[in-house]
Image 1 (cartoon, rainbow, N blue to C red):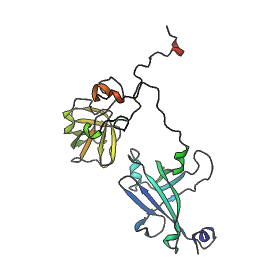
Image 2: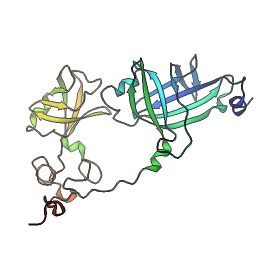
Image 3: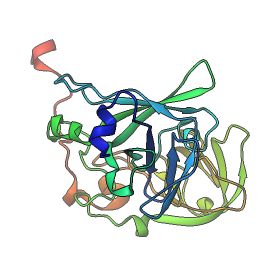
Image 4: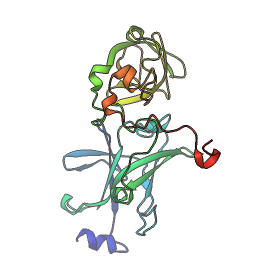
Length: 272
């Protein structure tokens, strides 16, 4: 009996689903079935996982689904203090008990936008289909004083490897926000402000830097004393500021802002 026949049957179908979550460096394979499933040579572990149905309409939220997992699952822990640093993608495969692997169908492909912890013991993951990216307008540059570039991107032209230091974590505050790294003391105060700290593929923005201490915007999950991390210089995206493009990085040729925009709005206060 084919997948389509069982899917349409009122009594013969025994559906189960496989959930493949992936970041840049890690994967989680779960199944709604009562026992482990092997698909394409990979093992999918049983878990209390469910989802809403997709909606086929033209609304902005069309095609979105919500996946529910226990709030203490390793995957949901990624959303406790921050969103994952690299995109978290999701592919759902659907099949029926007793059917060969060739009968498995893809039920959803997309990415996880956010995690929402409920009053109960669950976490809801809001997932958008891959097709949603086609609805986005193309990003354009803003007419503003600050640079439109992202530090170390191709337009900026600077190499992050040249503007980082590597060091060992000496201490971490109880809330995980204040981190001491001896190597940071080799740069003047504020050098790493608006930069970021990196461990593997995980990153957090640095809000402030004094001596060997940096303060993060959110805790870096899994960071421990003794870990080796990279800390990157920060840029306030100004043209001539102390922490900006020319003064700090000597990169004015790639500055993509309009530093000399008049500070007074003639439409609001006149030209006199």
